Image 1 (tube, rainbow, N blue to C red):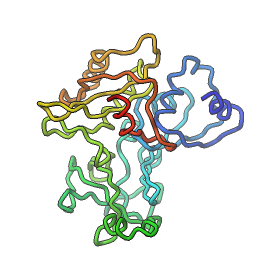
Image 2: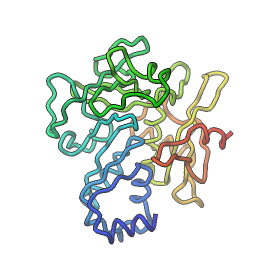
Image 3: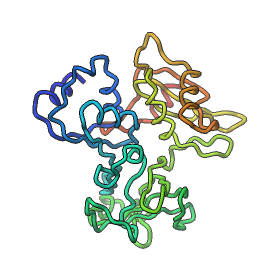
Image 4: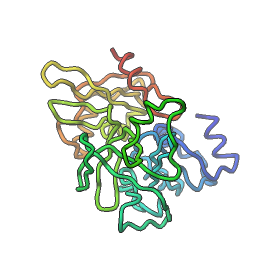
Length: 284
């Protein structure tokens, strides 16, 4: 972190990409008021949904616009920047529904088409509907190298790539990341987005980083377990602290964490995605 801050402050950096966890850490540093980011014009973030608090802090302190990006190595990408989604409250979870007939975007993106499919490969289209995001564009890869079996499973009959990510239709012009298809907590038949809970918990002032994993339960099947890195290890937050904070934010009761595990760090891959299997093994 010291090297990163030195580079941002002293090397005339205009643009960079930082994962939400790093943005959150910067905004919560004890000496944050001394950090000079005056040369930075914009920062993009991805790998997980950013928190509204972080976007607001960077805009308030340094006038920096955080651009929310969802994408994959296969060539998929949706971008919510200040031109297309100017309101920060929407930018955290509203991504442009690129290719939707009748939608115009100031960024001028062309040639991209997305649709959401349910488990029966039927397209969903109503606000609040959830489905797997399927993506088609000139930037999309042709297939997996020497793996025709994987390639065949990865594409629909009409050439859309199955991303493996669940999205929700926000409105007529926007979709939002809901969760990875295999990264849901299913509590008593209700699907809970771990990303939604993680994002909300990370806004707690005593939390430096957080991740959600399912905790097996004989009655409910699974319950929400939140793993937390404390901002101040000597005074970590309690489960009541976190659930009370989430209640005040308006989170539904069935989504509230029912177990808390304090950890030294949240394991992540090089692009910032949480290594859930490793985290579950460490907690167990």
